[in-house]
Length: 104
Image (cartoon, rainbow, N blue to C red; front, side, top):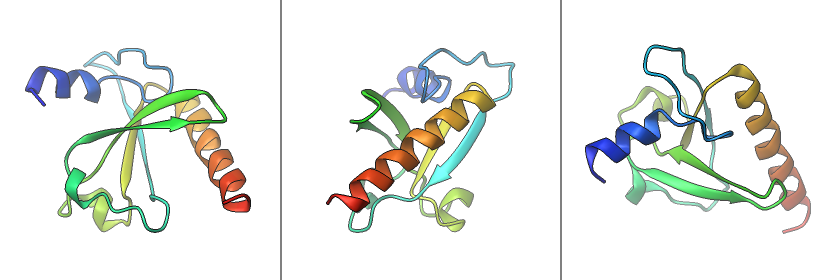
């Protein structure tokens, strides 16, 4: 992936997809992948995921094995433009997890 695309993705909200201005705060949080999902070959790259129940495709960064996020146990990192988008994304991820854990 070329640098300009990577930079653009780093400044795109994972939930609402609006651009995040370089001089504003970014809200981020980590998440674990489902058991059995191996993302080792995606370290340092962006991945897309479709949230079936929200009918949205979201973008996450897979942290490298030497990153703080990985050390803290996270497999994915999401960047959002606001606390509101972060909260909505967290809720959507939790909803998908809960529904699909109960219905494999």
